[in-house]
Length: 189
Image 1: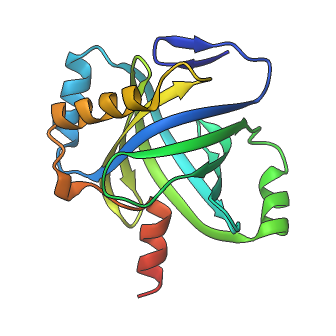
Image 2: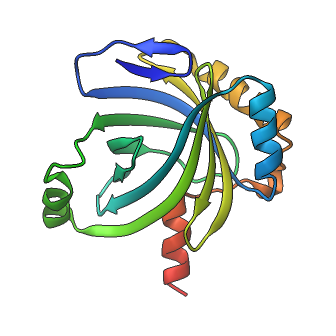
């Protein structure tokens, strides 16, 4: 059983498709965000030390997330824009002991590796990340997650924007691109 916030998603399959609306922003307000989440009875899932290995693909993005909490192969398409972004995400729960990473590396090649310390919280179907990303700094992410068609995109967008405002995240702090893009752009300099 996969659990998102207070909602349980029953599935015997290891893969799940999600629709989500998300924002990502630079922050110097991690303590205030943590306080807000605690005051609003957010479900703290823990601190995950994650390595995201992005593979070279022709369309969308493909990454293998290895952590002490989350372990998934994640395929997604998302526009690069500095506002709430809609993504279609396909997750495959991976076994950290498998040879999946080596198979993908051999077949596709590695594009970039992102390492981060991530605090994970949920309020209902909305997931919050407070991230410290190696070589990039501190960030906050808000993901309003639609499980198996249970939520409409407009509702997810409204949830995401509600929490952006509640957390005081300014438009100028929003990122257009992913951590992987930021690392790649720094590598090209």
